[in-house]
Length: 315
Ligand code: HPA
Image 1 (cartoon, rainbow, N blue to C red):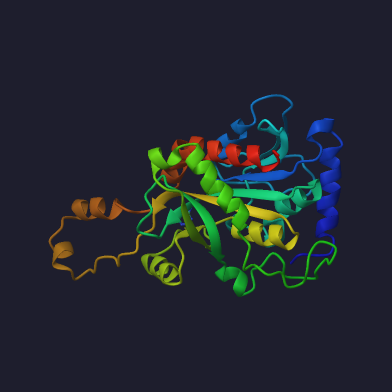
Image 2 (image 1 turned 180 degrees about the vertical axis):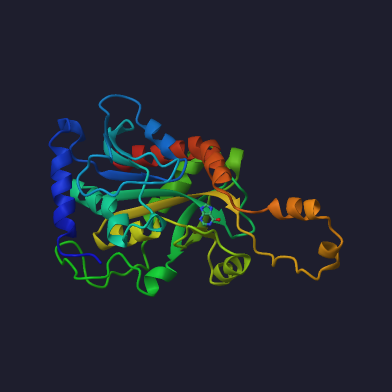
């Protein structure tokens, strides 16, 4: 439950961090969340000044427990306009056991640091059959099944000084920012190396289990193009507090939509135990595959985000 003291804590934490930052970094305009294996986005900040603040030691901050999610805030400047940004390298997930309040603490902190635009990235499973592993998708909507039935970070008393009780989400994924994403994509000539930038609908699943085949078919039937275990609670909190959002998924695996084989299938009946095991290992989602795809596509995602941010406050 979000309590009235949530923003008080975020605000105290923000003050605590800001007081130790050099002047130029003290008013970050853009917050960038780096998803699984996408921590390389921190390299988008090349020059000094650059200040890293490990999550460990930040008061009230949830500590990440997943491998490949080393946690730190990185403050720096991006692009010719020297836009001040804060990167969140590593995030708290609901499946780690954190409350939705804690999962979204970093987003609330961004708001308190003065961030206006959140760029959120993640690794996701592709449900849309047109997506390939390694593709990048710009999100244009989401399905938040858990949020619709009660696991919503805004549940609890509302702080009217932050946002309204019933925030609309029909325009959650900022059209003007998505337009910029497509322009940046073409400018970087990613359309020739990678094809077009997809747009799609992301479905939140709490995890940590990956989806069953039937669950994948259900989500696809509901209109989802991607499924993942993050991002949506952050988007909800960001929109509630008036920040604009842009989100990208990296497709790290293809969710399996076909029904599994039946035990009485003649093919299965005729297979040796070893042959069956080999057959079954194909198409199963696993964390190593997710991290590896992240490393490969991180450079493109990094270039894209850098290009968008570089242009955002230039005149
Ligand atoms: N399902 C849920 N979350 C994910 C997946 C997936 O297939 N791939 C990466 N994150």
